[in-house]
Image (cartoon, rainbow, N blue to C red; front, side, top):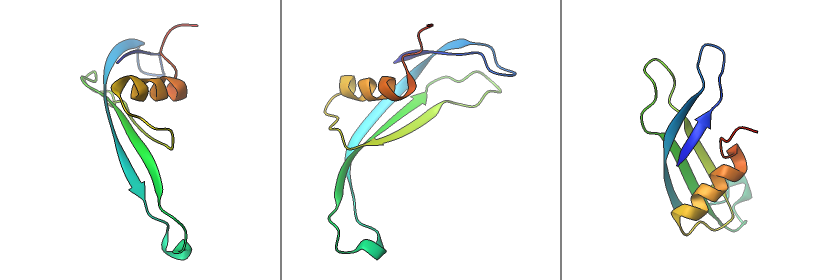
Length: 88
């Protein structure tokens, strides 16, 4: 997934590529809520492949209760949260 990263103090604007990974997982209820049911969630990770030297790598981790069955659905969730990086 390619995004535009806006200029920030000490950093120029740039275009970068994020690697998207996703998977289903089950969260158990906390100890104080033992009787509650488990919760099925999908985890999505968007990670910058080649961050510029001296700048922090972009790493976004998302949890959602919306099903994620494909890379396209994972990208849709990332865009919905963080935007598509296009100029507005």
